[in-house]
Length: 57
Image (cartoon, rainbow, N blue to C red; front, side, top):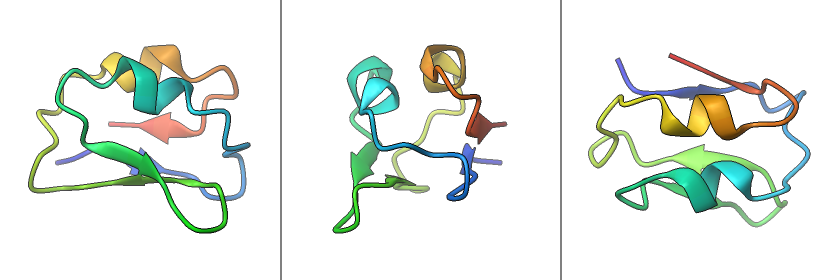
């Protein structure tokens, strides 16, 4: 199961985008993280990189 983003907690800092090794996370038009489920490796690198714990596996 790909990484899930809690849009309520996401502050749009981009830390998850920077830590994703395959570029599966991008900030959307409103500045919140979105995961490309087809590209996500489910490695959890972004989960550990999120300072507000908005991501989960």
